[in-house]
Length: 413
Image (cartoon, rainbow, N blue to C red; front, side, top):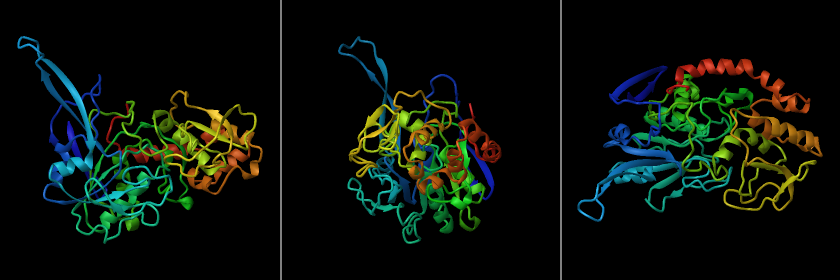
C-alpha cells in the first residue's frame, strides 16, 4: 500500500491514495519521497511553492526502452536505465510555480564549509532567489515567506542529532506554522537505520547542534522526525505545522542505504557517514577528524597525541578552507578500512584522551554542546570505560524509544 501521511495536531491521519504491492523482500528498488512525483505534484498544482533543499534533493527515474538490434529479425532487448536530476529542475520542468529556494548549512549547492556564513543570492541555473537559513537567519521571516502557498522540504539526513538539517527542519516548520503555510516533507532513508544510541540531550545545553531531548542517534527518517517535532509540540508556543509526509517506498529500517550524493562536503562516502557519529565528538576537542584531507571523518589525529603511528598533514581544500592544525603534522589512526559499526563507538575518543600530551587542553566548550550533557566529559576525565558510560544512557534511551514508537512509519526490519 502506498500512502501519504498527514499530521495535524497530535493525530496522524493515513490516507490511502494508490494501491500497490510493496514487497520488502528481494531487490525491490527503494524509492524516496522525491522519487514518487505522482504523490506530491497534485499537492503543488496551481500553488506558489517554496523549497528547502540542497544538492541531496535529487529525483531518480527508471525507464525502459527496446533495442531492436541492427537487423529486422534481431531479438528486442528490454533495458532498464536510471536517470537522475535535481528536484528543483524537475519541478520547473513540470510547470510547478516554484518561487524561492531556502538553503541550509553548506548552502544550496552544498559546497560551503561547516559553520561558514551563507549569503542570500540567486541560483545561476534557474534564476530563483536563494534565501540562506544558516548563520544569524536560521528561521525564515514572515517577509521571506511572503507569497508562498506551500513549502517543500527535501534534505538527506544522516541520523545524528548534531547534524543541523533537522534543526533547519524545526525552524522551517515553526515559521510555516506561524504563517499558516502547509509543509510537505519528501522522506529519505536514514543511513543509520533504526539505531538509537548516545546520551540524550539535556535541554540546558540546547543549541543549533542539538535542539530536542533526543539521543545522538535517533533512528528515524527525517519524515518520522518531522512527525515527532509536531506531535511532541516542540515548536515555539506549542504551535503545530500542517504537515504532510511523502514516505519512501520499498523501505524498512533494516536495509542498507548508500547515499547517492554526499550530504555535505566532509562526508564523502559510506565509511565517513558510518563513522560520523562516533568521530564528531572530536570536533569539541583539539583533535582533527581529517578536515583538509581526502579522508574526512575516516581518520583522526593531533600534534598532541603520542604512541600513534599514523600521521597526516591537513591542508585547505573544498569544505575546509582553514582546517584545524593547518600545515601541522598530526598523529592518530586511519579508520578508512573500518568495518561498518552499529551505533556509535567511544573507543577512539577514549584512546585519544588517554594518549594526549596535555589532558587539560583536550576538550573545548563545543564538546558539551555536541554531547548535549556535561556528564560525558566528566566520565571520560574520570577514566570510566565505554561499557560503563553506555550503561548510564540505558534508561534515557528506553524512554526515548517508547516516545519514538508513535511516529515511526517504516518496519524496523
